Length: 463
Image (cartoon, rainbow, N blue to C red; front, side):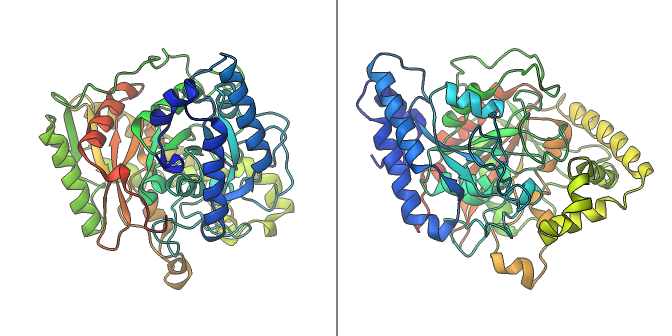
């Protein structure tokens, strides 16, 4: 077994009985970092010595019979906009280049409590405000499937690191698709749970706490479940969290899709889609039908009009950045400067309209879910494009988030799964969207598709 590309589910039983050492796992991931970091730029900070010390402690604890569970001794990476106690947390910005928090964000603290080994902090789009992970301060993250191409964002370093074997799993954040976009483009699994299941306190630069999430990026659905189970739960200091029943400790992923009604939206989600992406995603949806699901077309009422009314939400990002905009505007990258400055031009009435449109949009999705159990769409409507294209052709990065941001606006859980490769060898993702707090059904369907295909086992040719 190549430990750098093992899944957590595969190695955890061997770690528990001492057949595989956390030190071995950590060394395997660090070897991949040493080999490929210069080409892929996944990390802003690598904690080599600290990671080996953590792994050594984990091994000693396990030998003494103090096994904490399936994440004990597992090397993971953390997106650099999540606060980590005593570890530089830059959010990919020049402004926070020397910021060292005194406290972990709850999701990180919970991973530590589960025994995970923190390898380092991953690269991202500055302050999470973009979908390419082309960072002007720390350089662009590069796609393991083609280093000339974007990773997607904003959690690009996290997804690329998982795809390249530079960690066994990673945490990302997702306010408009920032876990699912790079997961699709890098050929791994990305999960955004229902809003409110996981605290977002300590997520730096969250432009709107009502849409932001912290979620797992992994190489399998089962691994995403393991990370999600570790980080869920309310936080008394985070008003965005919901006190809802926890996920079952042993969530059954074998339920399949037989009897489920899976809706395929007739508006928005397949518009502007690259032909290869559409073919691969529709083939994936047909596979769900072969597995026993009923596939039906669904119309989401008023969808185009409601989307047009959402533009005013961009004003919310000003609250977090207002002071720095007055004193350090030039320290932002150009694209983030443009985003922040343009947000100042949004009239209050447009913001009020956007809030109303968002409420109605959520109601329309609730209506659709009275007809179906899940929705199936492309995660991203185009494959990864070349980093150089952003400047050469001014290609619109907003296209990358076209299909993902709706689950943030409605708070619904969504997952991206590897669903094929284009003729040029670039990954494509299938997105499944579920009902609020119905992650169990969503993950069962995802696991059924994963079991029936082998796309999640493919490795980048670079590796």
